[in-house]
Length: 64
Image (cartoon, rainbow, N blue to C red; front, side, top):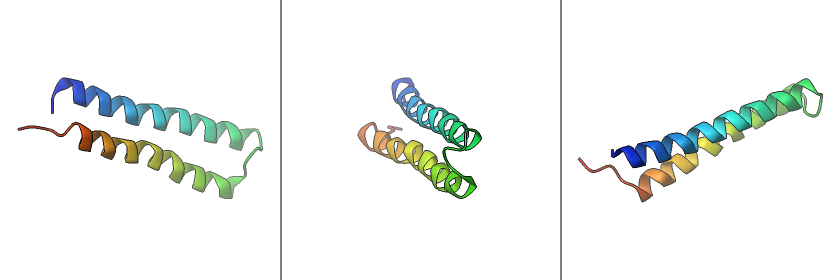
């Protein structure tokens, strides 16, 4: 994978995971969401990083 594509994929994952995790924890600590909702938020955070990464890898395929 070229450096450009690697950076693009890394940025997609890092942004979704960091912001989503902080938002979910903020909501839990301030009683905006409860413990049962944190599981759904966690799944959403993971998918928000995983799906765009798959798309990015399709758009910028690695060439050996």
